[in-house]
Image (cartoon, rainbow, N blue to C red; front, side, top):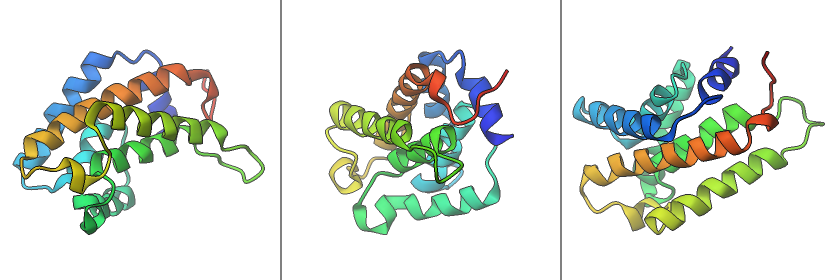
Length: 157
């Protein structure tokens, strides 16, 4: 069900609407006091209207501040989760190349737009930068979902 809802939402993705929604939701979650990990996961999933189970929400807390060590940005990590939902293989005998290609495109796009996807290199103490990254990630995800719309793990009618 989660993947089917996601695919319906991304079938006609319009980048500007997702970018603005992601920024808006990221700001709202951060204003409520959530740190970047949960805020990013909720913001990006919210922009695409993807319901999240509690396990994914709790797991996203580990993304905060680059996993607590300044490593990969929470927005980048949350984007990878959405790529996994969309293109992750269901059976071990299925290829994973589509998901890998999507992840590489995300990494290259994030690095090109922001200079890095590493928290300690991105974060300047201003949460507004995190809100900007959520918008950039939504743009990149929209491009990926549109480009790879025929390669989804589960086909819908």
